[in-house]
Image 1 (spheres, rainbow, N blue to C red):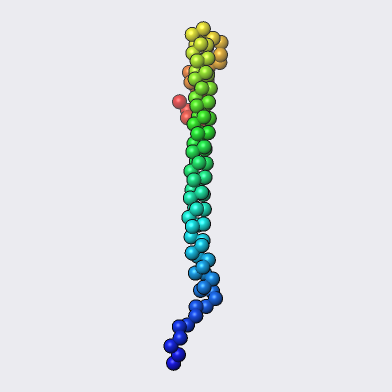
Image 2 (cartoon, helix red, strand yellow):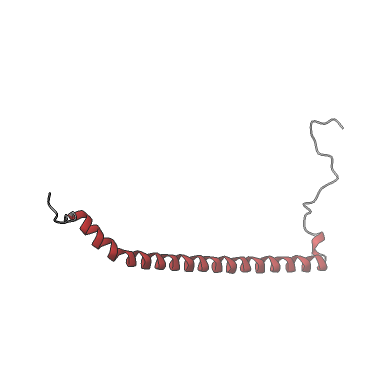
Length: 94
């Protein structure tokens, strides 16, 4: 029996050296990715809020215009889309 220590294989030596150097790179890459992803989510949320605010402004403008029409009596000249008293035809006899 030989008492000399056995030398590790080339693959084990390669991955031992490779993995030790790649851990900081993987951590840095993950940190950069998460930072950029968070920034993208923040910007998307900001854009959504701006679009929602613009839509609210449009609706407020429309409500104001409709209130002006209602106060000026212009609502009488527009066709009504409400329920009518006319009997609708159907399969019921009464």
